[in-house]
Image 1 (spheres, rainbow, N blue to C red):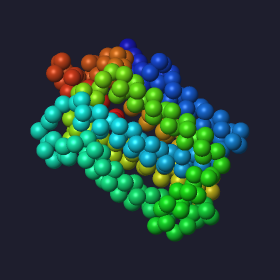
Image 2 (tube, helix red, strand yellow):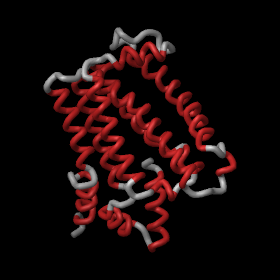
Image 3 (spheres, one colour):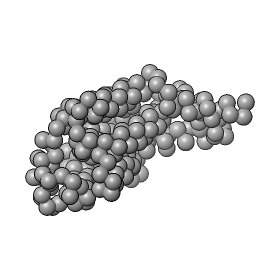
Image 4 (tube, rainbow, N blue to C red):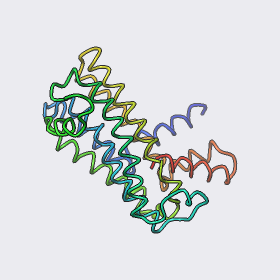
Length: 250
């Protein structure tokens, strides 16, 4: 009885179910490509890094929808009023963030990937990375995964009506900081131990765990509601915890 709840919670988050089947499918697909030599280990590492751009593009759509159909909040005066202005402001802000990350990552992997030029040659380096073996298939797989998450967690349940532009603006930064930390962590296997295959496996497993947790927090996951009700006290605390968790998975 003592271990019943933790085990049930772990099963809710990590066991394949109707909420996370695509996350499991995507991880197994990438693992299959790796095992059958249809994608290089370094391609998988950089595909996850390039997913940062995919996340940003989906967030542009989210911001436009929230600014058009969402709530008004006290911090909205800090944001551009028009949807076009808000999107352009985000693209500049996010672009600077991704650009700085790119310089760091290209410098980090420069010794292991001859195609990479000087770290500040960002566009040339992106062009080289996109041509890595298996990259188009990897990017397509990650795009489909993000599209499914966008539909189920934001569009299908009309979640965009619950946000204000100011509240949503910075949310992807939490997600991509976790993602880039995992990419860099797996990169150490490349740099220090020359274990490309192990690094790719590690990255797939870490990302699987992160994505499963994120999907488990989604708004209409009734299993997670049960878990939250057990660890919170009262309806008000439950609703606050659910809202905060939901926002930080966007």
